[in-house]
Length: 186
Ligand code: 5GP
Ligand code: MG
Image (cartoon, rainbow, N blue to C red; front, side, top):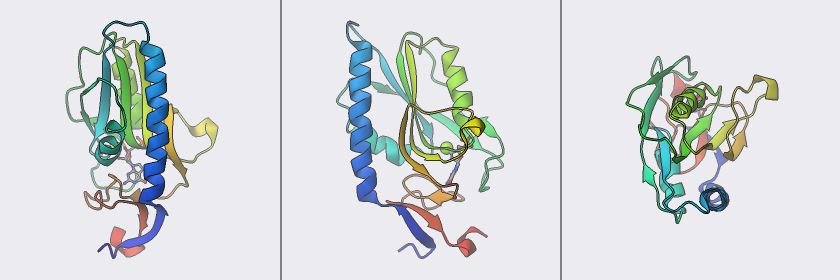
């Protein structure tokens, strides 16, 4: 069904187990953080489009009361393998002042995307702000401009697709995190 796939890096079963663990930690942390607040406002801010599969898995494991307020971001020029810049394509959620915000993204690479989104949200003075990513590319600590509070898997510096991640808009529906054959990326 996916002849372009080279190698399965992270299998769907492993992902499912890890999402269970992350969700449990997030619930514990948010409960602790909001204890004593009468009507805590929790808002998840998923970054479209890559986070959709992870988001669907994650939210169904969070037995909390929260809103979801998406933000669309694209790395341009659009279809490339390397992200060369970041463009916010939708309004950012407003009214995050005093809210407990969890930003959800597919992968943390250079950190440009999350840094921009985080800084814009911070300006609204949320009560707390955390970042959650399904994947993180391994890199030397000094090169990392931002760290996530919750990381599913740390992966080598390879271009991956599946589990929401695309190449040229395709392969988001692959249930595993995979690499592509070289000729699929021409
Ligand atoms: P950053 O701004 O951290 O460099 O890049 C983050 C964005 O670039 C991700 O949200 C994702 O859209 C894209 N990206 C980075 N690495 C990969 C990768 O290995 N595969 C895919 N499909 N997208 C990636
Ligand atoms: Mg993305």
